[in-house]
Amino acid sequence: MLALALASVMTVMGVWQLGVYQSKTADATAQRAAAPPVPLRSLFSIDEGLPSKAVGRRVTVDGTWGPAADQVLVADRLQDGRAGLWVVSPLKLSSTDAVMIVRGWVASPSDRAVTAPSGPVRLSGSVVASEAEDSSDDAAKGRVLSSLRIPTIVHLVNYRLYDAFVVQSAVDSGVVPSPAPAVVAPPPPPTDHAGLRNVAYAVQWWIFAAFTLWMWARMVLDAHRDPKDPTTTTSAPGAPAPGASGTGDSGTGDSGTGDRVGEAVESSGTVSA
Image 1 (cartoon, rainbow, N blue to C red):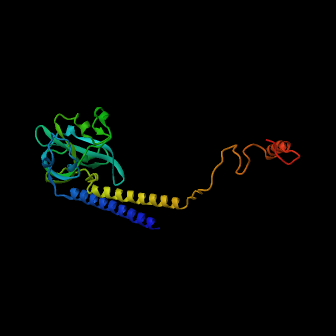
Image 2 (tube, one colour):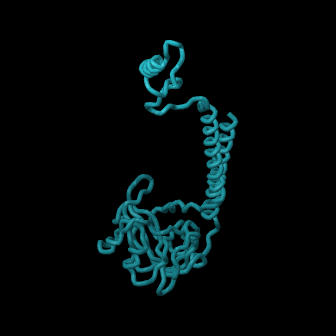
Image 3 (tube, rainbow, N blue to C red):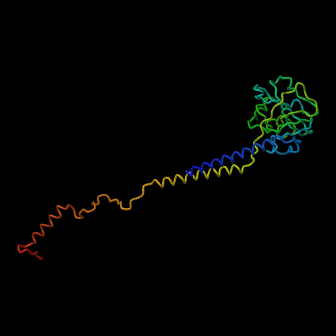
């Protein structure tokens, strides 16, 4: 019973350590998403790949809306249970550099809110990464894409693009088109794996619990195993039973010997040499 109690305590300690890890992870992820917005260029440059620390961060971007011909739509996007499209427009940061902005959601490609904006603007939003689904074949099918991917869009424009999207949350300055696409909630930021040491502690506690139960089981088996009887021996097949004559059947052997002795006994009662 003591082993079971110890194993139970160790298991609970492992679950507690896992809970600590999950709490730290959730707090770290929430803090990153809730951090004050910073300029996009302060997180990483257009010459770098998207760093994991930048995904989910709130940023500000200053620039000028790019050509309307470079705007794309991303199909199969849900908004309040309705299927529609995301409107993605380039924002030029210089004559050679731009970042793609997810301006919002529309119900159909013919929606008036699809009309591309123009002029200078300063906006804020959240950094998101390209989706994993391959849409490389979409480049030859027009401007309605199946997934949100920079590797696809980069072949549709003649300037450099940041390796990230910004999901627009507000226009801080500049002309706001009317009507405008519905604001899109950014995807949840990736989990910030803080407190991995607590996961190691949890695994250790569970290993200790398993070892305790194993040792207890071994002790129980040893206690109930039948002891060996040192007086018990096993006879080989065909060996004579204990006490049996070593020269064959007692009747035949004893009778033959008695006859020979009897012949040697003379009438005088002496045994001949």
